[in-house]
Length: 418
Image (tube, rainbow, N blue to C red; front, side, top):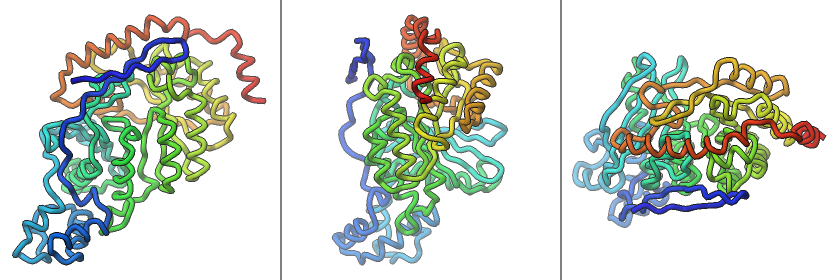
């Protein structure tokens, strides 16, 4: 069964966010769902010494193994029971696709209940980056995003998020990308809106950052959490004292257009979102990334670059970095990426106004592995394509009012700069 939420924006238009009903039951309890003391307490309840939890945790986080045969420091009698209690099987690989000369690997994972998610592993000269999923599908309904048009199936548990990381670590270290490499960077930019699954994402961040045996011991500065703009959750994350990078998927600096491109903008407007992003910078000291998908003749106008620069500069200097990226094609899309000349003009306008800007590298687009393309191979892609086309046509019908520079634009800029 599908549930639909229809928030209204200021003009009264209905904007549909789609959620599938949660499946019954939870994923099996796992070491990555529990803090160190919780693991120790669990084993004590089972009649085992508490220190066994640390031994199993070291195998999981330091050696990336869940095979009891590898855990020879555990007593042979009861080893299977011990390991099964803390590291049950949560997912299995269904398929994999390579792109970019073998430097990008997209994997389809089947979870314990048959739900599927995708992750994308990318090799760079000095590191590997994992783009992982926090939800199966997404309920944000952005019309240019295949994941959003597929709808939300369910949230992932913290352990399901962490298992994606562990399994991809094993793939990277085994030479799946051509040579053995280590995952140093993680981006929550796969399937789902991370901050809509706040508790599990927060727990998984602790597992990534805390040292063995508590977690993997990764650098918080190499972890990025993306959001389309759930303002209360941004403020909550800022208070966590975890210096991860926040990436805001903005895509339009004006509410008129962003209401159509990002339906949640009908609740949290651009100004409120950028205020929360600025607060995140102040609390954590981490510069915020502003993600901006450039869509031809929609959001790539020079005046919009001027407006974006003014919005950012009005909140201070140096707190944000803009990452424009040409729109990645999705099934059924009637929209295309900006031209090279429009991209250059947009970037030059930002740079001239003192905004740090880098056009982001696109990886995996030929295997539907780039941003906005993940919809899982077994999802009804024809239905996703139809929904995307219908959603985009609805936006197109209103675009005329968004394309033209506002008549009072110069006055708007002057007010923001004063």
